[in-house]
Length: 117
Image 1 (cartoon, rainbow, N blue to C red):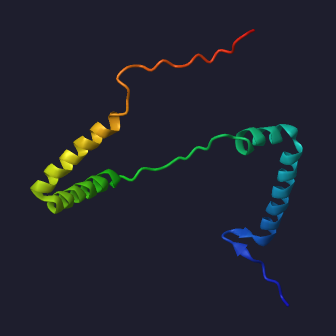
Image 2 (tube, rainbow, N blue to C red):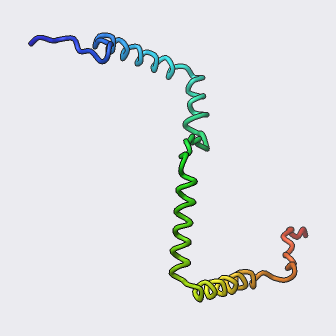
């Protein structure tokens, strides 16, 4: 069997093998240094948050606005004039119900301090 050199782009297979060895050696060197472990632990392993970097869509706002206008137009057409008036009355009743349980004056809170005898 004849082995021919394999090329990836302009890099030979031998160079890739050497790169692999260098990568393993670098990984071992980084892992053996205690400071690097602390840095990895602090910033990656024990990190309480993540950062997500997003790229906004240029046309998303316009698309959402058009979709919302079309949705509202379809809803208004489905309800009609009487349906809109009825929906407004239901909304006002729901607003009154949602705040009716709130007391008109402040309720005295119990004292939580422990009694010393």
